[in-house]
Image: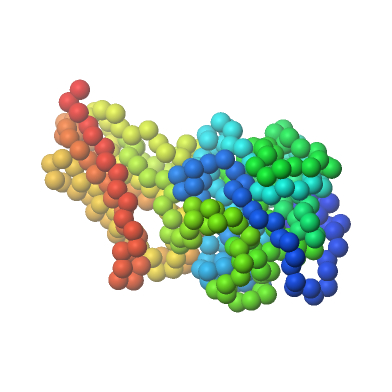
Length: 338
């Protein structure tokens, strides 16, 4: 997703006054989860607020899980297929609806022409909510025709506002939640404005404690992984998320795949696939030369003449950082004689 001009996502956003140099924030809203999902199972944080006012990119932990000028938090869901089933967007705090946009088409931004078509409407379908003392929350990239609220309406915490979509300037299905106070962007993880303090400084989070527990910060977050019967590409995962595993020993191929979010410069992945006969495929990536917002891997073999041996296959992948193994994830597949 690129939201270079998120502040103009809804035209009405430009109409609110900015308060000089005030940095005293009173009565901030306490934020709950803005979508219905299982944290770290069916939804993940892809991007945080970029707190660095320079062209460099830093999230609130001084890592790079953002992009230049990003002004909100992106909660990503697994796939377009899940989006089409309907993933509700929820009000993260009570307030009054100030502005609403609906009617923009849901589609991935994959070219400069696509991006030009949503210029000054990067937020896509969404809404702006007013809270006490000049606080605002903004919801972006909602599904066309699903918004359930109108300007002037009073909404409650947890109320369904609509569904997650692909409208505006977005490269994956998600809800973008932005917070402002008197016109200034605020990082909800610290309660601070970008540039107000160096990254790594401890502020006061606007999230309810349960959100901080269910979404602990992780640079190098497993997204999806499993077995497939063919080579996997990013379009497959974007469309379907988790792919159906091989169901027969006659599968044309046996592939272990996965995607990891927000890898750091210097990180490596080690991938190991073993079969019931003890044979294995082993891969290790070169150290990444820059931050990776997402990285797809796969390892496997095509079947030759004979069926795959019956038994248990195991795929594993590990995040290596320096001399440490940060985590290892495992997946098993059983092929029977039937």
